[in-house]
Each structure stands twice: as C-alpha cells, then as structure tokens.
Length: 151
Image (cartoon, rainbow, N blue to C red; front, side):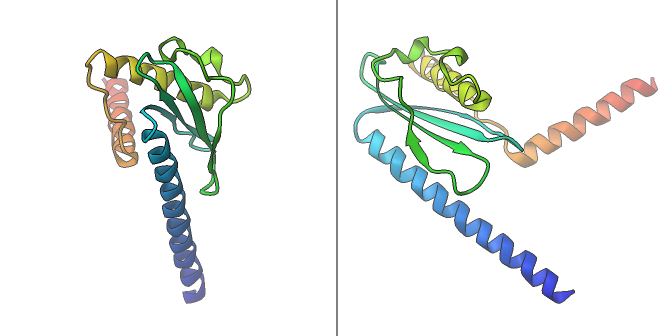
C-alpha cells in the first residue's frame, strides 16, 4: 500500500516538474515575440481534448508579423509556428480562419482577435475563472437547478 502511495506521489512530482518546464518554454517564446513588439494571445482550454494557446506578434497597425501556437493535451506540447497568418489584420480574424479539424485552436485564434480589439478600445479583458472557481460555479448552478426542480 505504501508503494502505491509513493508511486502516486512520484507521478505528481514528475507531472509538476514537466508542467514547470512547459511553462518556462512558453515564457521564453513569449518574451522572444514581445521583444519584437506587441503580442496578442488567445487561449482555449481543452479538458480531455487538445487545448490551444496562440500568440500573434503584431505591428503598430495590427498586422500580424509572426504567429505561434502551443497545442496539445500533455505537458510535452511545445510552441510551434502557425503559418498562414503573416500579413493579415488581427482584428479581422474569426474562428473560420483556423484549421478546420482543430476546434480549440480556432477558438483560441478568435479569442486573440477579440482580446486585441478590446485592448485597443481600452476595455478591461476579464480573467478566466480558475479551475476551483469553475468547480464552485458548476456546483452552485447544480444546487440552484435542484432547488428550482423541487419548487
């Protein structure tokens, strides 16, 4: 029984280490783009599907100079080039501009465009809820549904 506990603990430590390495890689790639100018980011978490983060380095007019993505379900996902977006206006991007078979990547592209438009308009970009906040929201809405069904 203790051996199983040690294996589980080691798996958690390894997963934490690999996640930190992934975050460090992302931060290094983001800083590289940021040194070249403005960077618009969009993200869509995946759950059991591949999540996606996109970064668009744009010039003063909102024209994309460099496009990068990180997509995957594991901590082994790395930042890679996202071809086909250079020279396009970020404000005009929609979900339809992304690859047809990558739903979360398409949503991340649309999120980056929306975030850029909001930032340029001076609007506040809301922070996404943390995982525990999502769980709390789901539980409270479940409780409210049960209360309305009883009445």
